[in-house]
Image 1 (cartoon, rainbow over the protein chains, first blue to last red):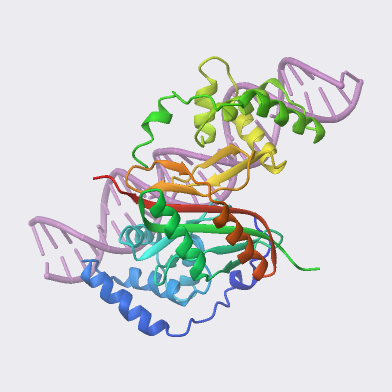
Image 2 (image 1 turned 30 degrees about the vertical axis):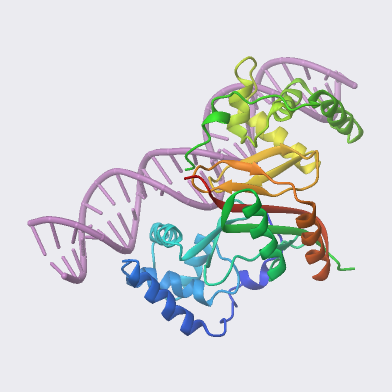
Length: 156
Length: 156
DNA sequence: TTAACTGCAAAAGGTTTGCCCCCTC
DNA sequence: GAGGGGGCAAACCTTTTGCAGTTAA
């Protein structure tokens, strides 16, 4: 099991700038897809909206349960529904748990520090473009990609 | 669950050219790492050597059990040991099972046809180089990468 | 003989499902 | 009163582990 995800795990995840606006757009998206935004689903979305990391189902529930209460099964059902609807993105990391994020922006790589387990989001337009080109060359239309770069920290 | 992995699942996986030589080198590698190649471990390696796909633990055992017999726990223990030794590479795909391949060559992307579930191996030196550069730019030394490109088949 | 390895069965951990209640339309 | 959603607990599936028997150095 990964060692150091202390910061995020302790619960002090901060708010992403512009979260409100994004939430409204997700809400609209759900509406247009015919997904009823119940209390529980809204709560799950809120947690993901506020997260700056990629929480798993139990972690999402843990964050919820500070104040409110949603059954774990409901969290899973919500995550599955929203993933199938294309609103969330599910990623599998090596700890065996699925982790989720709002599919608000383009697919982006994750860099995983193999020494600490820390996950860093990467933004690189060139890389994304090149991946798209590879898919095209093989005769496919790029739908999405999952790139995990495992790196050893330059730390001393 | 993924739909079409019919061909490989039916068991008609073919032999990779040059498999014998490669097997000897794996065997040597195990020796130099102090890993005893028992009957069971050799069988697991043989299956992986002959595979052209990326079988999961139960699938490996299924292929074994045509003739011989290895306990599933042993398959798992072997896969873990060889993965930790750096001889195998474990990849997580979206069906929740870990799949394995012999780490004989450089890390390479997988293209997954989202319509059929088919997995295609991709070779692209430029892409690999660019991923390495990204890691370096962020201050890491590239250890490995996992790139899954999800594409929609150009099929009619 | 000791240490490593295997098999079996049970346990573990994440995820899904069945069932029933509740709420809404 | 029909239908969808949620809670709870049980089921499921992959993977791990404890233990006892076996093999090998």
